[in-house]
Image 1 (cartoon, helix red, strand yellow):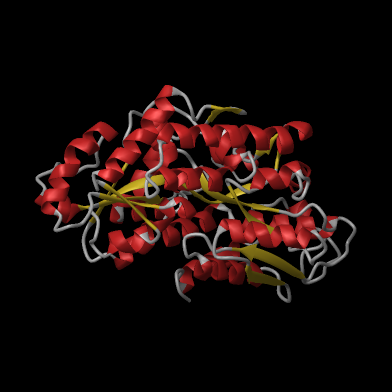
Image 2: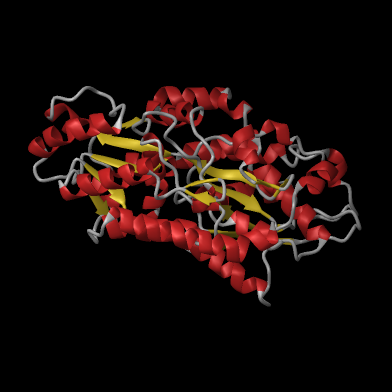
Length: 433
């Protein structure tokens, strides 16, 4: 066993399907979960991109689940290296391929699947299974709500974090904390550049690797937005000011835009990094220096939620849907969300997981993990232009690449983003609302 020891595995297996009401487990008495019709479901297919390098712990949770149902199999499928690749694979299956029983659906992919009725509303399934959905963190659960229905349960949920190299911070004579505002970062950056041995003060993933998510906090900190609900606001004065700040910091070599930001920071080749909480465990293992974590620079609130949930395709049988929900409930119960959190760095999706003795002991030994939990209280839902308008994240990321590496005019690029966002909304969203 890799991430979970034998004692933990036995505890998880012993929980069985207790997260779902006992009445939901009634069926034909067969070895695998069965639906209301009594038809046995022997195999579940789980499509995942293994967010946060989570494949070992996903296999661990599957093994524990199968121990509660002898003869029953959960098949874990590598459905892509990213959320977008998984979504493309699922879209292809919707045109005539074999559908899985559950999928990882990210913050930018679930809504389009809900709008097109590709994933099923879960509320009736929850009620039939007597699943206590109030046990999930409210803000994370409600992120998947559309027109009064919920289309996923939170799974690998995250926020961006500010990571910094404590040795480089000390060499620059900076206080042992992250910058409270982007103005303060700009004041600190020359000191970090002067003592960094050529390493940039900060590195951030490029537009192909979610720069649009990390910049989300920056644009909020400047008082701007990508949109106000469905209305694009890229061209507002404050939004443009945020884009200009990013471009200026890039030109001054205070912020590097990288296609491999994690490795750059982990190798000591950058003083700080904007990255997901889901990278915390991996960076902690690989970095040869002490890492500090902090809230994203403000003024606050300046941090979006992110990550992914677990969703169920709509075009499968009721029996398969019910069986899929049982696995989802098991994988996200209190003990398992504690296990998943400690193995990856993602935030706990259950309220009582925050107070779990194992969680508190872990946080005492790993104080960097506490930062994400504390920052979670100050997060806000993402702007529609990024997460609800099809292609929004990729479009914004490409635009941010244009104003940084491309050196293009911020106002011109942001006007283009506004025009294209409105065009896609009117074509693909408005007729379906």
